[in-house]
Image (tube, rainbow over all chains, first blue to last red; front, side, top):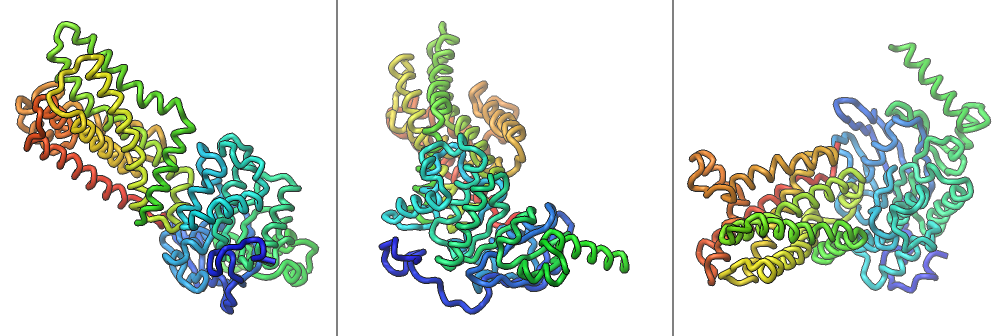
Length: 269
Length: 245
């Protein structure tokens, strides 16, 4: 269960049941992003259901990171509708409700893992008396308790990025936006992290949007957003995608959709 | 802005420094060694050492904090930690005040060590109170921090940011009255030196050197240095953007 381990008073982040929101966690309608004079996100419309694990897949450079930056509100020149947890993306009230992990681990290499989390916990406004417990829980979630007091810069690449992931878990955000969180990790760790992601969605009611360019991770997601060149190729569950394209794997389904899109482009150059 | 977040940022910056003892040692020792060097350079002219030594006590905190802050904030910008912080409920003022406070603390330690060595070991002759001297050093350090924060926005790499040191700091050293009295400079240069904050940092130090009580000129100098620091800190805050392209 979700709150029997944490004796915090009701109303503190993470200790109350997920709000019974009916609306989608993310809703985009006619979303456009222009970067350096180039349209990087082109007329995207989709919804992400709450308390689910949604995979954002596509080749590198297709606009995944830009879309994620738009969702967390750090991307400029965003046009169209983009609502996150019922508010416009980037709204001040969302800053402690959305956790975000960039592709490069954005933590301080010259602090220990625990000191990193301690600082970010203070920035998030987690009360001092709950901080140590939350930090320990986040470190346990990413299996880094054994390295809590090592200098982050001295950790291995995979451990380094898990410190960054742990920061995003602080304060039990309702939406987690994770940009390629499993890149460079060994298979055991990858499985453990996917188990954690599903536990967060199932037990804590967190919505997760996880990007990857590795198609074999697609089957671990409940829903998929397939992107190519700034456009949405498909938004469906892995099973439905395979069935619709009569293919055996999400990778084949993706290739099938890419070919179909290319043909369509070729028809109207 | 919230005090707890400002102080958390200060503590975080100081913790980062505590893991880097070599930087701290360099920050504290280099000014002292340079003062000792200068003492022997003016072996035959102790009066000249007094004037230049006092000026340097004003220049050191400004230069070192400029360098340290510009690199530290550039690292925040390029490592993604700044983007992450600004996607969280952290005020821009919290970040900037946190940095200014952390490096201000460091500057007070640095200035204390340098002043102690200058006064006791090198017989630098001070008329005024060492507290006023520390106050000027602190204001200088905050000005250096402010300038460093500001210029880091215009640099894309460490290579570029260190080039701002000769571009932003050297002209101020040349024009602050250290090499020639400002009123003897070519009139245009004198006018330029009138608007450069380091001129007042050095003048403030010399006021403490020559007068036992805080003079009107001292108050004016300290106010100008503090005011410029505040102005540049606000400019620095304007360069922090929650949304970037």
